[in-house]
Length: 144
Image (tube, rainbow, N blue to C red; front, side):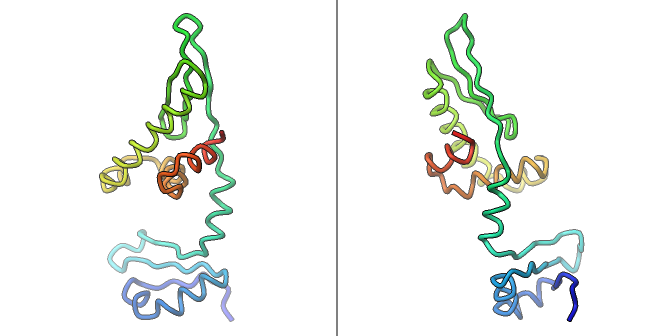
């Protein structure tokens, strides 16, 4: 038995998809690569494993108050977004709205974002996309 990661080109992945899916469900990562560009790879892994990995990826929200203006700001430097409000709670709500709007644009313009954003930012965005637009899930994912 080989301990190397199973790798299949796209054509073979389609052909053997049920078997590859079963391997992933049992805990073996399966790689699909593009024969024309072997640097382009996709991992097939059990969703529960990805959940656990993304749970370890933490946001570090910054909460600040401008005393002069009386405005609270909550910033997420990981994705370059912020929210403002007269209270921290209102700033968080504003941030949640900004996140949802950003995610909508991100999905619509994924070809551009996938080329210009850093991989780590894309992973943070993936974590938020997996919340499916649910404000409470996003709030929890960002650390509130």
